[in-house]
Image (cartoon, rainbow, N blue to C red; front, side):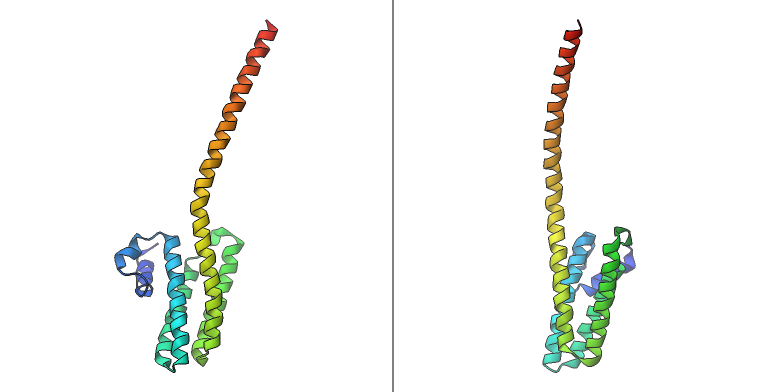
Length: 168
């Protein structure tokens, strides 16, 4: 990730991350999670701003939300296949809804986007957890696979010895 993108993420995440140094230490998947959290926070605050008739606050929070959505879209790895394309379309949809919500100061649209973002965030968190567990699972499977190979090797060696004895 280049320096300009990191600086943009730092500015978008200042309400979530305590220090800039923490942002630079995060892995890309952790930054994505932080962006989802910041997006949720901005959408909630925008909806509250609309409800309390603080349109300036709502405007700035919805603009930040849109910036975060754009950043999430820019971070998509299109080599990942069809899921990347679908995620791109979903981010475009969310960005459009945020713009309309800002134009009309529509609290219901903020909530609609928030529901989708929460699902994305929960799915992302679950995927991160599974990835951590999956690595350990692969090691366990490799261990049992090695045991099977050792058994098969010893069985094959014993069978070969018997075959050699038989030929004598």
